[in-house]
Length: 117
Image (cartoon, rainbow, N blue to C red; front, side):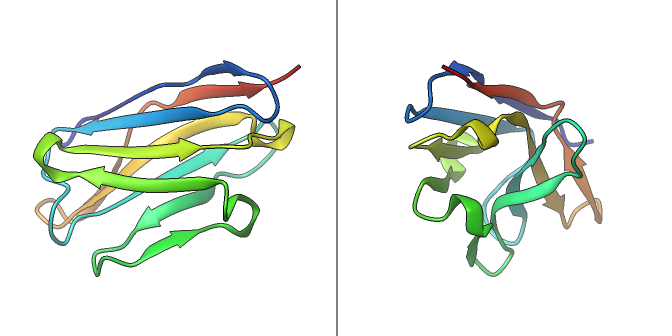
């Protein structure tokens, strides 16, 4: 099956930056959609940013202008550059890939981002 491994989480001050990485065992090129989701304590998991199978890039309103999703198909890696971090960005961030080969979505185990002064 598909394996996804996130990295790059940690403790950062408000206003700081982090770059998350997700290495996939399956191609992220072409029609396989990829995205980043997050879940804070007591909250439901929400989509943060995604690249659809059609190549469209989507962001949730709260991160527009601050976060950037990108991918490097040659490295099978998806990135989430997070700038101007806020306290409310604190959450476990998960990488997701929709695989057309398997016909289902796969998730990483998550990486914790803590924004605190």
